[in-house]
Amino acid sequence: MNQRIKPASRLSNSPAVERPRTTGAVTARTSGGDRLRSWLGHHREMWRECWVRFFASPMSSGMTALVIAIALALPAALQLGLTNFQRAVAGWDGQPQISVFLQKRAKEAVVADWAEDLRADPLVAAVTYISPEQALAEFQQASGLGDALAGMENNPLPAVLLVRSAGSDNSDLEALAERLRASALTDSVVLDMAWVQRLAQLTALGRRMSLGLAFLLALGVLLVVVNSIRLHIENRREEILVVKLVGGTDAFVRRPFLYTGLCYGLVGGLIAWLLVSVGVWLLAGPVSGLANLYGSGFRLDGPGVTYLFGLAGGAALLGLTGAWLAVARHISAIQPR
Image 1: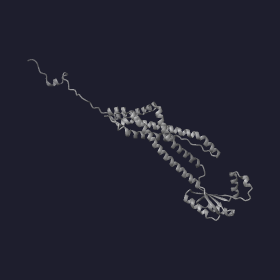
Image 2 (image 1 turned 45 degrees about the horizontal axis):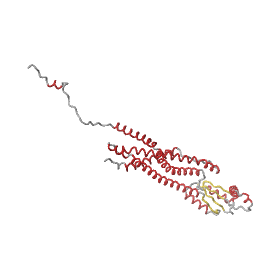
Image 3 (image 1 turned 90 degrees about the vertical axis):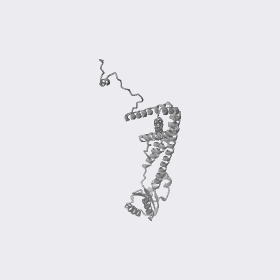
């Protein structure tokens, strides 16, 4: 036999021999960067979609945003009004002052010596003496009864010492007032700071009431958003079932509804700021005219950029919170069978 057998090593290198191929499913791993880009892309898509859905039904979306705006505009307007009121009274003389009405028989020289002693007191900042004649002239000018008082034979008004305190501590003021009452020259003592303290207490009461009203209306905003998002979930129930059947997670499903609540709150906050601005613009003219009648240059301050960001940000946060509450309750109940 002339045929030769080829070596095994040559057979293994022959192109006629094919290697076995692997068959079946192949597992591919996605990198962290791909997952992050996918996550951010889905967020951008949901942000655009929430605005598309908002303007697709402008009547229902606008009514929801308007309800949120009115609920937020009420406490915001009250808070702005209190701020303007405090600014208006800040220009008034709020320094503690004690009016000391002197005895009618007190001699002016003795009163002058007593005033000098009071000026040396460390608790006293200044002492002003008003004679009976000066007091009568001021009363005639302020009351407009100059002709009626001109025919009086005797001046019924006593001399007055206006004592301005160096501090504003209540205990020091009361101690100084008691010392002034103890003098034989004193007829009566009036602490003129009492109305300022009452005004401060009323302002604090108004501020707390505005905070309470804001809390109650914020709860109302949450209920409005929760109800609106619940209706959105029910309208898209079949879509949610399909997404969960193909493996969509709860986080994936809840994301568009969270952005919808955020959109409602943001638009409501912007409308609330606009409502407060229009209200200030309508009241600015009458308030300026009233201030001019009293010789004041007071002008209303409108809601600036701080109020804009505060209302928009707070409303957006309330909308997001309400949407989260609605989604956490209803999404988990929708499960494919």
